[in-house]
Image (cartoon, rainbow, N blue to C red; front, side):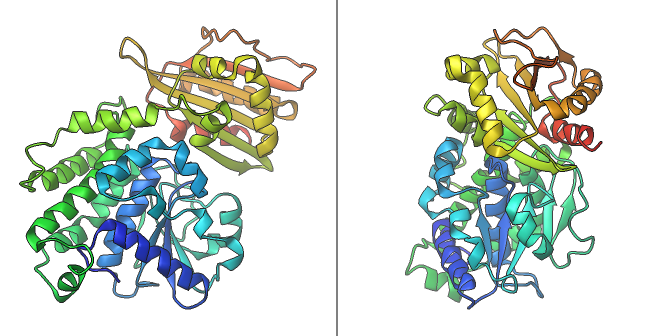
Length: 420
């Protein structure tokens, strides 16, 4: 195991080697994995928990190493420039990140691998079909799905309200983090100097600062720098206060730290999707569920629907139908979240379904008009198809006036509509 104050980059490389050994049957390992959208919150939650947990091991844990894993192939990192931007702040390369490419399903030995879920509380897709029985812990801020055992000791079982899952991870790991931060120079730290450690006091501050920035990035993005209406919780504010205090203790970083500037930098990277195709934008922040033998997919996008229509040009409608076909979707939704040119936070919703599911989506709309504040006044230059059509496609789109409702609320409402 790397020293507690070894660089995060060194830890990730060690974790990858340990995972390979586990796949070859030589070691046990606990994989910490976020949801299939692999957004910034899933990334930072998995890295923070795995790193701290691997240093402050529970007494009777399954394995001596916790491996953070992005729930996407490595090629998907390119679609998430905000992760690359944060890696620069944290002193790590994206090539060191572990992805599904490092977890070939056919090589995973169930007896050697256990899973801790962050930023979701039910494994989805093929991972869920194969390994749900090996889930031994969870930290999440989505609606409880009762898929993780009630007793997960010594691992966490936290499903609580928060603007960002990372806030819950920080709260859970806080006492262990304090122990790590206050560690005096040890034999392990001395060994680590031969690899990458600096003077113990200076390096301890650098370690704290980099970890703090990892945590702050997703909390600030998910809560719009603690300004998102109806989303910010006390745990988010407490986590930001705690993490910023870590930065303020560093003589080298305290004077230059600027939360607004840091937030803007990560946010600008996240918004930079001009170089992506429409298909890539739809898959960038995408989640999928199976409900009553029907498949639901929801893409979250950081630009307005008008941008997507222009990006797709004449092929926008065909791109949506092809996307549904490729994913085997019964119902597909696009949720946009962005700041207008007048600095107003806005949301839009587009919903499309196959003919067999028209009743379910109309049931959703009947409830969502009041729940989400759906406004029919959105003009995209597209035809709304709310009656039977030759294509068998139902499509509608709206302004979402209740901007406090994100995919965390819309997803469960759509899944409820598909249950009958």
